[in-house]
Amino acid sequence: MLAGKNITVGITGGIAVFKVAQLVSSLVAGGADVRVMMTRSAQEFVRPLTFQTLSGHQVYTDLFVRPAGGAVQHIELATSSDLIVLVPATANVIGKVANGIADDLISTVVMAATCPVLICPAMNVNMYNNPIVKRNITSLRDLNYHFVEPGVGRLACGAEGRGRLADLDIIMEKINSVMAVNGDLHGLSVMVTAGPTVEPIDPVRYITNRSSGKMGYAVAEAAAGRGARVLLISGPTALKPPLGVEVIPVETAAEMYSAVMGRFSSVDVVVKTAAVADYRPVTAAKQKIKKQGETLTIEMEKNPDILAELSSMKKHQVLVGFAAETEDLEQNARLKLEKKNLDLLVANDVSLPGAGFGKDTNIAKLVFPGGRIVSLPKMDKSALAHRILDEILTFRKVGKINLFYNIESR
Ligand code: CTP
Image (tube, rainbow, N blue to C red):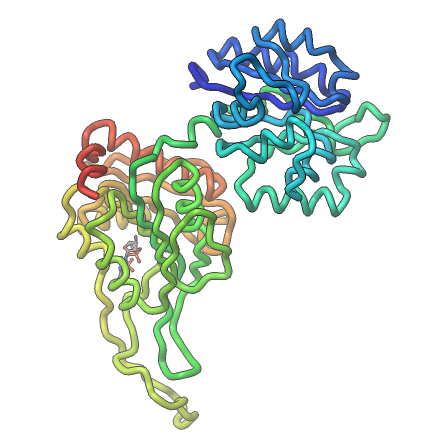
């Protein structure tokens, strides 16, 4: 995965600097072309010569050095990098990047970069817990900066707690995943539907369901992170839309139907996590319904089955459905996959602890055409989202999505 990748490592001052020697060595062994930048404080801990020897390149320490040929060094470093890793990242460099300060080589390169940036903080536990540092980390996460959380243990200053640089294995794993997930869906257009629909009874009441939208938002975020163009058609949720995703808010199943149909021909993949109401009140009363008899009957009529209709229209698109069940999971899931002619159905028993509506985790079964079922363990919705996208990529490899056709036809 790292072969031929240009990785720029920015080292700031902390006792963990010595651990970065091993990291640089592993990156080089993995095939990456590694450039190292060091702040003045970092050089107090380990001399640049160590990193020069390990990376095979001069170490960059000064903002105002003009390399031979007249190139502007910080811009060249920024634009030629596929990934920048700040390791160890002090509270100081995190604060600078979060607040738009570029007053040395590392902060200037990060500001000029358009590639992913991975930040591996290491500092004293009280510094890490400082609300200002926490706020800076949150705002960087919101801007799509990647983080590897520090580990817990005895710190060099003698304190105990969270703050020590994460294990190198974890950092390497994260580097591999950031490199893999940035770009492997590039060129694909993915439509995700999420959340519940809301069917009005009168101006103050409606019928809805318990869907939180978390699964669909996780799929949208993961697909955007992997380079896809993402359209999220969302029923009402309390969630913040992921960055870089186009959102169409809808309320009723009929509105979701129109939004989906209007854009279906221009997408390559549809992931339908939305919990669409199967029925809606035949008429929504214009005025608030007054309390009268002991019972109230509301006549309902069927909503269109959006996914079933898409499957009858589909050309090159890959269709992924979701099924929330409370009994006979596998049998119901196989029937739905067949009935709606899907490429993949993600089924989950919403009555299990750790699965279903409002939770951050899910326990899913992947059901494939032909009846093959893969049972997945309990996993975070984001991990499940990536797993689903991996399956979609597999379809692409076996030729079900003709990527080149899709790019040209757009
Ligand atoms: N779906 C849809 N339009 C509907 C109902 C469902 O597009 N009117 C989609 C959902 O987004 C989901 C899949 O179909 O991807 C399965 O939804 P589910 O509610 O589990 O299945 P239904 O077909 O509605 O069957 P039932 O409610 O009887 O279990």
